[in-house]
Structure formats: C-alpha cells, structure tokens
Length: 185
Image 1 (spheres, rainbow, N blue to C red):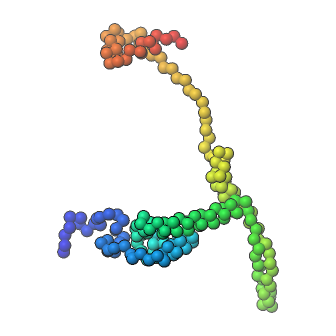
Image 2: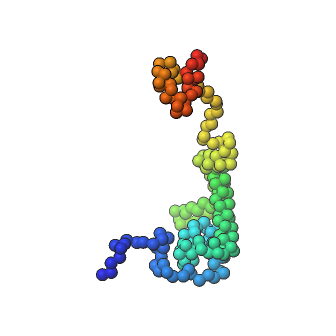
Image 3: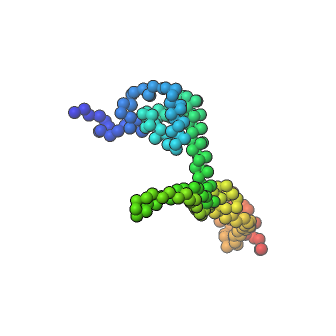
C-alpha cells in the first residue's frame, strides 16, 4: 500500500479532478472544430456540453478559446444566433402568436381526415413582464426610488459636566461640542 500525505483525498488543481490523465496534452487541434463548435453553439449547447460532443475536456475548450481566435469568434457567433432565436421566441410568447397546423381525425370507419387549422396562442403575461422589465426598465422596474433630504442636528447638553470632564474632552480634540451644546434651537 502506498501512503501519501493526502491520505487518499484528491489534491491538485480543482479543474483537473475529472481528467483521467492530468499530465496528458490537450486534444489535437483540428480546423474542422470551428464549424462543429459554431453549429453546437447555434443549437444552444453550453461549453461543457460542446466539450462532451467534440470529445475533449471542458478546459480544452477554454484553452482553445484563449489560443484560437477563429474558434472564439465562431463560438460567440453561434451563441449570438441562439440568443436571437430565444429573444424572438420570448417576444412572440409575450404578445401572443398564431401558426398554421393540421388537425388529424380518424372516423369510425378508419378514414383519416386532415383539416388545416390555425392555432392561436394568447399572450403570456410572465413573458410580457420579463420583456418590459428588461426593455423599458425605467417604467417597469420593481424598484421604487424615494428621494428626499434629511437634516439632522444633534445637540448635546454639556452643562452638567464638570470642568475636569470638559478639559478632558478638550484634550482629546473635542472642542466643538460645547458650542453645539449651548445652542438653544
């Protein structure tokens, strides 16, 4: 049995804990990765899911993003396209939408009847609120701002203090208290 000072606990950088061979080199770079990564990002996959799909470790993707500007640009382009699709879907959901569809019915004699219809989806209130809070935040924000000015004047009554106590206050640099204490507002 081999003993270590770590007593069998994983040690080393946290990002290498899932790597089967931490001393191994990153996967070999192939220029076709650019197209595959952009395609997968367009489908909405996360970087971790993209790494699994191209059979590399997640940190290899991070390394390639730092060292391969073409891959980084392709990844950002794919993510931007997916984000635009989600934004369009959110907007359609917020205002409601319709689309053509086909209703399929089977008669008791086994005859299939296909009828073209239009499906209507009403506006989704939650999607509308989310959209408005982000696009018209100055009018739809939940934060309520209260503006005002507070004037606070604190007066101390130093008339009950002895001269020794007043001298002690003066020696530590508090000389203006007696002026405030004598105010009669």
